[in-house]
Length: 63
Image 1 (cartoon, rainbow, N blue to C red):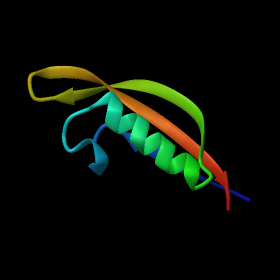
Image 2: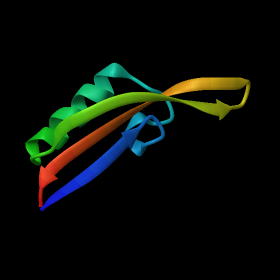
Image 3: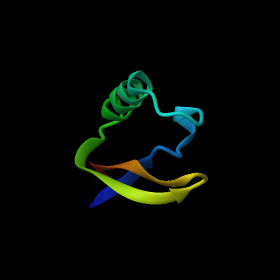
Image 4: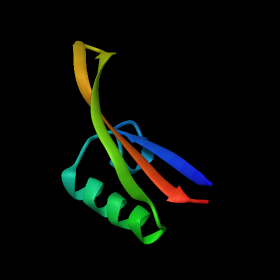
């Protein structure tokens, strides 16, 4: 059986602001726990001041 995790820019480790270094640290941390990236996408979300793109990362691992 597999389990999945969905990461977005709204997750706590960004601290409210996207940072590639934080993304790298988070991805390495999840990889150490056995998670593998299976998909990356962007989605348009409505925010103050208009629309913006948000990164969505889907992770998978054996349960």
